[in-house]
Length: 159
Image (cartoon, rainbow, N blue to C red; front, side):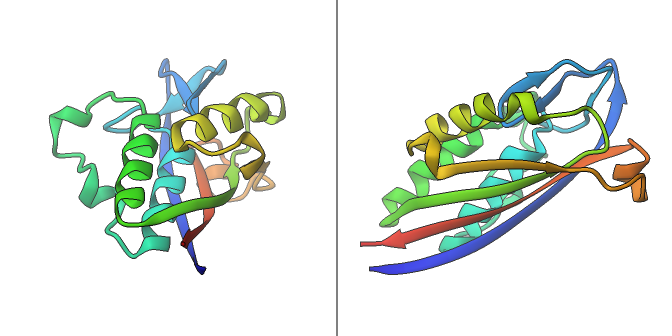
């Protein structure tokens, strides 16, 4: 069996009166992420990690922000389509590990639902998806609550 690892990262600005979606879960908060899709940085980072692990493009090439088909779309669809795409290329998903970088809001209560939604979109067990969050100690644009970022690592394998 051949294993490969990929990393993904995404960052979006926060804007008042916009829904905050992370890992497919709407989080109650006074700001949300600005994006062509739903702005879900966690799903975007995981999408890029999977594509990178397989050496198969990146999120901007597969789901360009110039394509109106993706305007306002749930980023869980990016995960579903990516999982289907990499499986057709002979890859299977091992596990996902991720960090959300956000000063606010507190995200711990939402991790189980995020893990479940991501796992469902990828067709893997929820135990194979791990979500964590870190503050930035009030440093940079994330620490100043102007943006939220996410990073992810994906393990894939060829049988």
